[in-house]
Image 1 (spheres, helix red, strand yellow):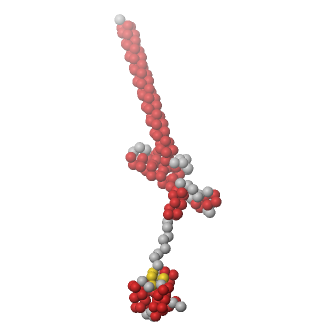
Image 2 (cartoon, one colour):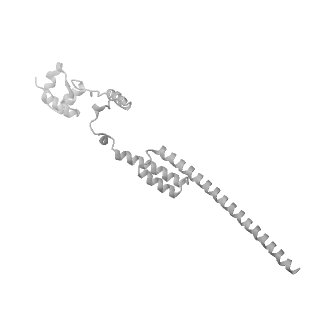
Length: 193
């Protein structure tokens, strides 16, 4: 018995595909007589035409696969399609690194940890690929600051030593001048007597 029309009408009425319609084989004669949408609706209500439930599309396997991927599985040479640069562009890595380093430099300059001259030289160095990550840059800054402090202390010590020796020289010359003046005064007084 050909029930194609009834199946089509049932699909149209219920808003599903024809493959989701089940026609009761024991009620074929009654279904055959239904030639209007109203009749089809009545048969659906009575349970002679049944709309099949949606087939389950489980995501359990996909979830397991993604968990394995997160652990680093399924990413060997056989699974790779693009080149290394296509999969993770070196330019993107460079941009990320520069942004991290420049952000750190900006923060340190605003906090007053580095002055504008050191900031500029470090900015140029980071652009010149001297620092491979943030940690290396921080270590470099600490070393540079320590070196700067050391040179400052040394220069201060040198300056103090210079000032001290200058003061000693001046005192010595002053004493010599006083002695000379005393000797000359004695010589001038001696002929008068």
